[in-house]
Each structure stands twice: as structure tokens, then as C-alpha cells.
Image 1 (spheres, helix red, strand yellow):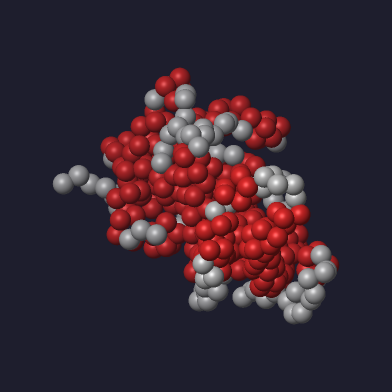
Image 2 (image 1 turned 135 degrees about the horizontal axis):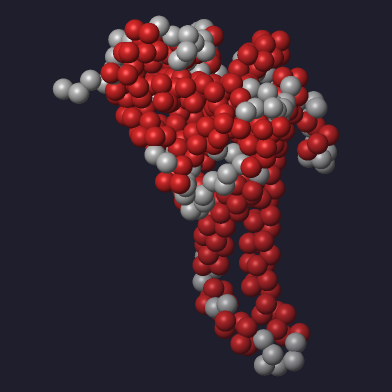
Amino acid sequence: VRRIECTREDDVLDALSSDRWPDRADQELRDHVASCEICADLVDVAGPILVDRDAATPEPRIPSSAVMWWRAQMRARQEAAREAERPITVAQVIAATSALVLIVGLAITVAPWLRTLLPEGTTTDVASLFGQAALLGHGWLLPAVMLCVWFVLTPLAIYFVVVED
Amino acid sequence: MTFTHAQPLETVVDDVEVSFEMDEEAFRAFYDRTARPLWNYLSRMTGESQAADDLLQETYYRFLRSRAGWTSETHRRAYLFRIATNLVRDRHRRARYRNLVALPDPDRDARCVAAGDHAEATLQRTDLRRAMSRLRPRERALLWLAYAQGQAHTEIANVLGVKTESVKLLLFRARRKLAGLLRRPSGHQDGGHAL
């Protein structure tokens, strides 16, 4: 079975992190590293990582704790406000889709009357396009279609508005 | 909180009550202790200073918003690094999805040299970063947490969401791989992998 750890790893790490490796490390530890594959890997890997860590310490970009706290507060408040606003947005969307469906339904209902006001033959194609005659032929069909359209349209509109938020 | 819809969002933001699990004083002390190691960790995991800046902010925000009920400083710290690790992982997935390759960060090297470092040390760090970029994100995280942060195996397991018993083997493999990459001549390390 291949070894995956060595009992001297902590000693090697200690020598590396306290800057004793290699010159000020015990000869016995150096001999061990020379003969141990695991500790040799450790020296090759942990040494440069520690150098890199220490070199990276004076990075100037980190914002102060006060700035970070303030930003977090502001963002949390904005999110809370948006969250509180959501029921109003949803109500508005429901109202808008209801109004849209009602307007279309009303337009279909009054279209025959409107057609009488226009020159003959002008609206026949449009009326047949919307299946107006068929819809108005049955008393229940138009409200049923409007309700179906509303049931499909409203959740979709709510979804898109909420996702947008 | 009550407000009318006629008010723009910006005007009501100040009235909104928000509470974090930590108070300001405790957070600021915790931030001062952890921000630099966390930034270094994020910087090594992403390979980009700008990304580290963004993720640092996101990490602390999510940390503050969480209701984790930390029991100790170690737990709190591990939780913070776990959030950071998950953010890096998400970013990595998105980058892979978009087939993006991380670009080297030349200004960072310039800053290091300007700080008065020796050329040899700079070269060594460049080699390390190249080699690290060829590791998987989890391997990078393991090595950085173990050697740069000096975290115990249990802490690393908490941060990375793996079993404590697995850390030893994963660390061994990552170390082998990185040692192999570092021993290769520099020219063979070019063409880093997508992060």
C-alpha cells in the first residue's frame, strides 16, 4: 500500500513556516526530506505557497470593515424594500392583465355594432380572423376563452416581472 | 414597514429595518481578522484580483444574511470560507459553460515587483500560479487552505464539504500533482486551463 502521509510532515511545515528551511533546519530533518518522497513534495509545494501568501499580504484593494458593513446594510435594505414591494407589483400585473383581457373581450363584443358604423365590407376579414362570429354564437364561449387567456397570461406576466426584479 | 407605491424605491430604503445575526462591532472585528486571508484565498482560487474583489463582497454579504447560528470562531470562519468556496465553484461552472479562460493578472505581478520583492521570488510565484491554474478548483482550495491558511483537516472538510477522512488522500494527490507541475520546466506549464 502506498503511503500518503509521513510522520515528519508537521516538522517540515513548521520549518518552512518559521523560515528555518533549509539553512537553519536540523541536518537530520534535511536528510529525512532527501529520502522521503512525501516530505520532498511538501517542501516543493508548501514552500512556494507560503512565499506567495506572504507576498500577497500588502494588497491594497480590500475595503474597510466600515465600508463593507455599510454596503451590506444598503443591499439588505434594498432587497427588503423590493421584497415588500412585490405584492403591489403582483397586484398591478394582475390588474393589467385583467384589464387587457376585458378590453379585448369588450372589443369582440362591440365589434358587430361598430361594424354597422363603418362602410360595408370593411371589417368582414378582421372579424372572421378573430373567430368573432363563433365566439359570440355561444353565450358562454367568450367569457370562457377570456378566462383561459387570463389564466395563462397572468402567471406568465407575474413570472417575468418578478424575475426582472 | 409601510410605504406607498408612489414613493421611489430609493426613498424608502432608509426606512427599512434590516437585522443581521452579527452586530456591527462583532462583524467589523471578524472582518478585520478574516478579510485578507479570504481575499488571498479568493484571488488564488479565481486567478483574478477583480474577481476576488467582487467575490469578497458577495461572500461577506451572504455570510451576514445567513442565519447559521455559529457556535465558535472556527465554525464561523469555516462557514465564511465555505460560502467563498461555493461562490468560486459557481463562478467556475459559469465560466466553463461560457468557455471562458482566465487571463493572467499582469498588474498583480507588477505590484509585487514594485513592492520590492526579489526577481527570483517573483518568478517562483509566477511559476506557482501557472501550476496552480492547471489544478482543479478543489485541489487549489485544498492546498491553499492546508498550507497558506494552515487549516486543520476537519476545517478543510467543513469548507469543502467533504469527509474529514478524505482530506488526507485528496491533499496527497493534489500535492503530488502540483509538485510534478512545479518540477517541470517553465515552458511546459504554459497554456493554463480554464478556471
